[in-house]
Image: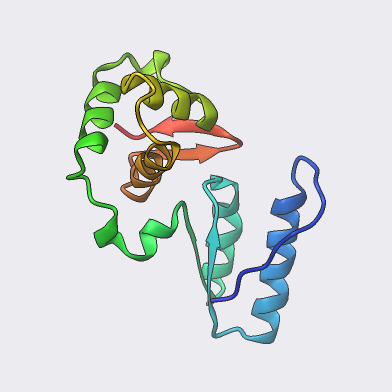
Length: 141
């Protein structure tokens, strides 16, 4: 596994960088299995195209997807968040990641560590309960 840090900014700068680097890596090593770590479904058409052409690429939302056993839904805080989100009206659920994070924190009267909130969100992604496209959260339940 090789991590690369990106400099620069712009609305799609990282997306273009990832697509470019992915192409360069695959050109040099077409048998390599590439994984894009992104919650943005915008990569999916590119990855489908590459896979149709015999390459091995996939997108994951969270590192927890590499070790699914760590993305357990048995954690009490996760269960509470999932239950409360399931019971809420679909149109009233948070649509942005930052809002979802704040919403989860408020479920625990802000007595929950940010790292625990982030883990709950990662488990939601890893278990395909939520997805994100263009910075907008979609609920799959």
